[in-house]
Structures are given as C-alpha cells and as structure tokens.
Image 1 (tube, rainbow over the protein chains, first blue to last red):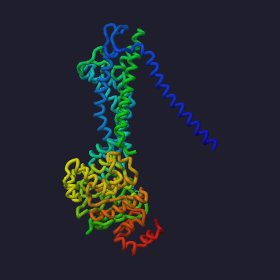
Image 2 (cartoon, rainbow over the protein chains, first blue to last red):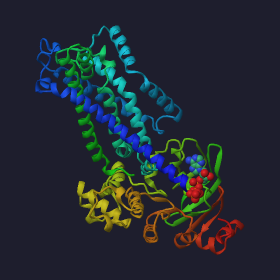
Image 3 (cartoon, rainbow over the protein chains, first blue to last red):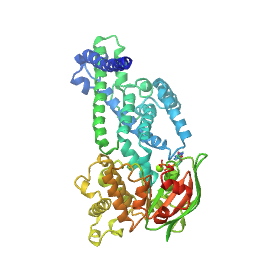
Image 4 (cartoon, rainbow over the protein chains, first blue to last red):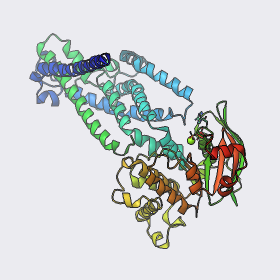
Length: 282
Length: 265
Ligand SMILES: Nc1ncnc2c1ncn2[C@@H]1O[C@H](COP(=O)(O)OP(=O)(O)OP(=O)(O)O)[C@@H](O)[C@H]1O
Ligand SMILES: [Mg+2]
C-alpha cells in the first residue's frame, strides 16, 4: 500500500514540476521581451515604416515587417489550408490504401522534421533557376511548403479520431464518400482542424530561416506579389545583430508584437473552435 | 412472399471464414430475429444485406443475395440506392454530429426526398412545402420512433446530448426517414434500459405493417416476444430457420434444442 501511495505522489510531483516549468518558460519569454521591448514600443513603431537613420536609432517603425508578416501569413495559411485539407481527407481508408496512407504520413513527418533553412535554400535555388528575385510570392510559397506537413498531419490526427461507427452510420443511410466527408467527418473533426491551422500558423509566422532568401527584406510595404517583403522574425534577427542599443531594444519590441499576434490568433481560434464544437459527439 | 433470397452466402475476413454457405428466404413484412451465440456471424449477416461489409478492406463475399429478385451484389448496382432501401440500425447508436433536427432531416435531404413524395405523410401534412415540409417530416419520423414528445422543445440541441436510449430511438427515426423497405437492426435494445427497450419493441410491432424488420438479439425471450420468424446461426452455419411458433415449438435440430434450453450459449 505504501509503495503505491509513494508512486502516486512521485508522479504527481513530476507533473506539477513539469507544468510549472512550462508556465515559467512562457512567462519568462514574455517578461524578457516585454521588459526589454516595451520602452521602445510606441505608436510610430507600429504604424511607420523605417525612416532614414532608423537603424541608427532614429525615427520610424516596423510597419513594413508587421504588414509583411501578415501578408505572408495570410497567403501561406490560405494556400496551405487549400492544399492540406484534401490531402488529410485522402488519408482516410475510404480513399487511400493503408499502406499508401502510412507512406504519405512518413513522408510528411520527414518533411516536418526538416530544418526550415533547408526549405529556404530549396526555395532560393528554384527561384534562381526561374530568374525570380526575393519576393512576397516566393516567401508565401516557401512558407506554404513549410506549413503543409504539420497542417496535414495535425488534421489527419483529428480526422482519424472520428469514430468509424459514426461514418458507418452515415454510409448506412446511403451517403456517398463526399457527403460523409462533408456532413460528418469535417463537422466532427472541425475543432481539431482549427487546431491544425493554428499549429501550422505558429510554425510559419515565427520562422526566419525559410524566408531569409526567398522573401528578402525591405523597408517598404510591398505593393505587388513580386516585391520583396519584410517580416517580423527577420526584423528581430537583423535588429538584434546591430551594435546600437536603441535598435536592439526595437528588436524586442518587434518580438513582442509577434508574440501578441500569435496570442490573439490563438484566442480567436479557440473561440472559433468552441463554436464548431457544439455538435460534435464525444 | 419472400423479400430477400440468400443463396450460398459465404463471408470471410482475411482468411477467417465467418459465414459458411448460408442459404435462406426471408419473408416480407414480418419481424425476423437472428439469434445465436456471440461471434457466430449475426452482425456479418446483417451487414451483408445492405453491403455495409464493403467498408471493410479485407472482406470477401461470395454467393448472392436478391432483394425483390434483384441481386444486390451485381457489380453495376447503385449501393447508395440499395442502402436507402435497406436501413440499418447499429448496435451502438452514434448520432451524427449535428442537431437532433438535422439528424432526421439529413437522410431525406441527401436522397432528395420531399414531403409530398412520401406515402406515409398525410394529405394535410403534404401541403407544407420547403422548410415547413421538412419540419413536418422531422416531426413525423420522430413520432414514429417514439421520441417526439421528449425532444420537441429542443430540436436544435446537439444530438450528442441525448441519453443513449434516446439516441437509439433517434437512430430509428433516422433510418425511418429515408423510407426503407427493410430495416436491419443490430441488437437495437442492448444499450437500453428496460423502459426504452420496451418502447423500441413497441415501435417495431407497429412498424411491421409497412416494413420488413430483421433484428439481431442475444435475448431469447425478446425473440419469442417479438419475432414472427427466427434465423439461428451457430459458428457461421445456418442451423435452422422458420416461423417462430414452429422454431420454438418443435425445433428440429439438436443444436437448436440445446440453444433454446440454454445448454449452449
Ligand atoms: N472487421 C472484421 N475483421 C475481422 N474479423 C471480424 C470483423 N468483424 C467480425 N469479425 C469476426 O467475425 C466473426 C463474426 O463476427 P460478427 O460480428 O458477425 O458476430 P456476431 O454474431 O455479431 O457476434 P456478437 O453477438 O458478439 O455481436 C467473429 O469471429 C469476429 O471476430
Ligand atoms: Mg454483433
């Protein structure tokens, strides 16, 4: 009896410590970024593009990077979603044999584990070959490639949780595969699908290496898909590397803005997820 | 009149044969009970009749099944149309992830049924068109399944919130809503409390006027209470089948006698 009690307590302690660790890490990140960045976070940081001398600590802001990141992510998330959903749905056993589906999963998991700089280099090589320069389009395409594996696999896991008996119910009513997919599978898996989009979004918006060569960097807000575009991760990266303390502080401000975007998107997604969860069967 | 003719039906999963050359005729507009010990192939037999077995990857079916003289394993048959004619009530009643209302309205919608085409809907009900018509239709089938009174005030609530017994009757309403000719029910009362089970049994007795109902049961007493016709399977073999009175009154086979007396189970 004593041993079992001890086991229970050790395990409980382990869980509490790990939980605290997770929260401490997140709180630590937010605090460091906030403490170092808040001082230089003001309205002009958000609504102005860099003026002459910005990188020496003079006036201007990082609107170019904020808008750039939003453009990149709007494009890449949309594109990745359009590609990922059909792939994830196809992995169901009604469509692909288990062997081929498992092979596809393996490929996706390998792609998921591939460092983002490899995506960047790959994108860059292709763009050089096509004679394209770093651009919003290039950045969107490479981010899409980066996001698809995680999005598909997360959707796939959500779709696999739909009970087979539930699908069988629908088929027993005489539904086609497409009707079953849309009326039953998507509805039941919707909260998980929202989570998948968020996971992929998180990977995309924070990534610097993949867009370093493919999207480039610029002080302007792009006016066409073929213009280069700035982004928040690169704004952090470039500014933190300068010797000027004011600019370094602005790197933290940029990181703070990035964090806030991620938090806001997550909250919106949670709310959406709750609404979609109304009818799911547990 | 026999509704379904099964000839030398064999089914195997992988190399595990679970039905061995089953042949029988199933009468129309009666309640037919399929009985036999666990694992003897009852569910498999049911699912062969609406081709739900097709959803399994490694299943092999041989022999043939004719419904109203039409072989349902013909390659060019429209499986979805078949499943509309042969409704299925599963052992575990999964609601579809939608509201109570939509659970019933879903089937008619995909099959393009509308109120005016349904024979069972009265002339008065038939007048309603469009949305009103769908509302009447949903009400009609929920009443038929004996669920209407309990859910009429919360039709838009998630079906998942219903109790298991209510979900089973919702599944019944859903099956009825596609106007099948045959209803296959796999242990339709096994998840139910005695009162809900009684409700379903009562509905079956009413429904046999218009439908051929084939149900699986573990409970011999239930088969005696409800069935007009009995099919007894044992380890994949059809041992005996016939009108319930004869089956229970003068069973022919030794295994049947043993099963009825509870010596084997
Ligand atoms: N999808 C499947 N894959 C492999 N074997 C299966 C599958 N479904 C059923 N079987 C096997 O086929 C045999 C018959 O199963 P079936 O479900 O038809 O029995 P049953 O009479 O309905 O049993 P129960 O009364 O326990 O529900 C069993 O031995 C079972 O293990
Ligand atoms: Mg069974």
